[in-house]
Length: 97
Image (cartoon, rainbow, N blue to C red; front, side, top):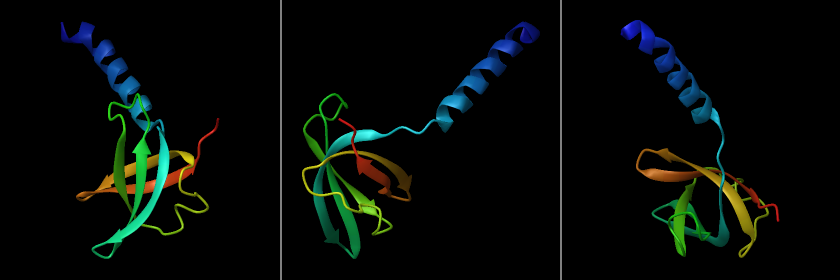
């Protein structure tokens, strides 16, 4: 029984590893930045369809160069990672139309 399941289990593990390596960007609208408790934060309104409709979320900015030339109101694509207790903005760019 285990021998018959082994190829299936290996295939699922390989597929999961490949999909976990894919980079996923979330789309939203850049609302601006703020400073709180000695940290800079980017505020991004998540667009409809992301299971958090009409929500503005705050992401800690670890590198002040990350927002770059993104202006308030721009549609953006971004990546964030969980670092300790914070969601940290890793990359942000203008969204393609």
